[in-house]
Amino acid sequence: MTEPRDPLFPKGFEESKDLKEQYKEDTLQKPAKKDELSPLKKLNRKIGIYLNPKNTEITEDEQKRKIGIMITALILVTLIISSYYFLIYQPQQEELSLMKTTKLNELHELYSGPLVTSSNAMMLENKINDANSAEEVENINIITPATKDWKSFHKKAVYSNVDKFNRIKAVYSNESGDMLISIDEAIKIVNDNDATTLSKIKFETPNTVSVPVLVTRLQAGAGLINVGSIVDVYLNSNYTEEVNTTNSSPYISGCTVLSIMRYEENGEIDSEYSKSAMNIKGNDTYPKENTKAFSSNVLELLKGSIINGYNEEKTIKLLEDYGVKLSNYERQINLGDLDAQYMLLIETPQDKVEFVINNMDNIVLTIPTSKAPAWMENELSSTYNN
Image 1 (cartoon, rainbow, N blue to C red):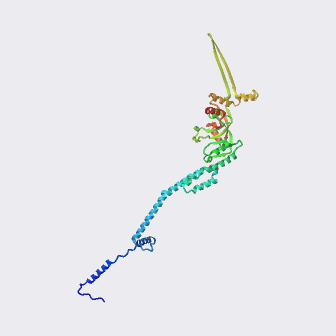
Image 2 (cartoon, one colour; image 1 turned 45 degrees about the vertical axis):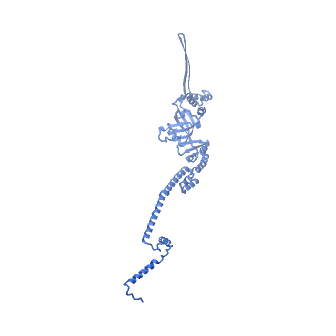
Image 3 (cartoon, rainbow, N blue to C red; image 1 turned 60 degrees about the vertical axis):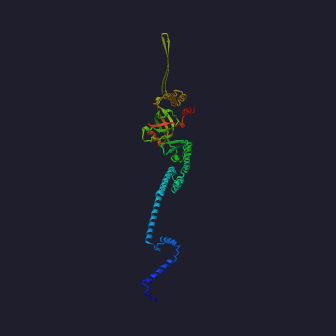
């Protein structure tokens, strides 16, 4: 039960007094101790917002902020991945692909023909395809195993294809020329070269025929070739466009000259030697002339010896190598019959016979200095050894 209000106090005074007392109590009361864990709680609350969005109540601003961060992070990740792909990964893959293609081309060039399916070729191809970097591809050595494989293959081919004259036929795939060489020369070629050359050559059994050709002195090695000479066959490119004019190698190499004949008219001899003198005594003149003449026909002498008109043994010995001797004398005096023509019988690979016959007017026979006759060796020696 409340006490009656004192009528002497104005109305509302009690309420003012109560408010004043309440104010004093509030102002004099010690401030509450600040919660030291509130920052940790705030951090936990923020983490909870992003990690447990379903279990934590978040504000609309926090939700917008969260979406913005996620979008920004997604953009950054996309940019990083794109930059890595276009600036690093893709160029590396393009370089790797180019290196693999180059290396595979080298492999297929060196391991060609009969070695395409060799075990080393398969192993190297797999190694190239499985490489993960350009450096790894670059370090794959092809030339060494390819050279070893080709040497082994060619040595077997040389010994299995030699003919009864101890020769072998070398065929180059990158050139038009073929070579007839001895077995020793073939083995030397194999031993002295690597896969770059050995992959472009093959050895076959010689299959040759003798081909008669009628050529001028210029085409016949200036008329200085002899029976048994080894000659190379070139084609005068001024007369045809069918052969590559930039090819410096002979079209056929190592052909043997089996016989030589000059025209009969080159054996006709009609010479006269005249020596005159004039003696003067006073007003008298006494001319004097000494003339020697010789006329013969070499072929007729041979005919006469055959029917015992002459001593056959002496005649043959006298005329032996007449044509070659004549050419050598012409060479020594620097004067000769430049219009002379020669009928030659040349040993030629069978697959080149048609070429030789069709180009008889344009072929040129040369004498390799490596197989030079004695007179050529003497000239070279006297020139370079003095």
